[in-house]
Length: 219
Image (cartoon, rainbow, N blue to C red; front, top):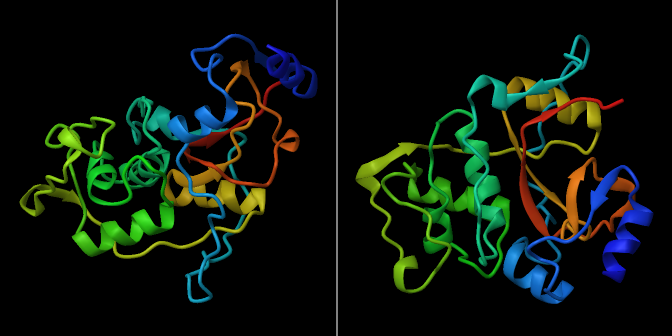
């Protein structure tokens, strides 16, 4: 509870309290429920940089959920597979109901991974299956054995690009190109209940993969 009280004091725009993760140490929370490998996102010099887009006339708020481009939020369970949901969600922007279990079982599994590597894996295998054809289990052994079936691929991609950290460019690419796979620092999410998390209270160390689906403002 001391950590929760500290989070609330340092992050007054959000609500912090008792959650299903409160009994875990931070180390346990990080190991079981995050998933982006430490030291992530040092891209090779030949990684394609996203082109600079015109940021004039961007809508004041935008949400891909309102346009049916993303499926409901998933529960990754006690599996460090956030990176696979982030990557799959970005593909879902164009191809609905793609499956994160393919990458979870057949790529890095529950022990953490990277969205750029997951994207490269998707390019190499040819794409992703429907979630209904390959349901998520939150495991990489037993039921988590790779059962990828190329004959059931319904979404494919051939490349990805890295968007700059400029917020206007992020917004422009989100509106023009669809949901974005991003990494965040999740230090305050263990006690998060609601409201707007303050990004200035976080370390620059990235440890959790999420999907950016929109933006807006709160009075």
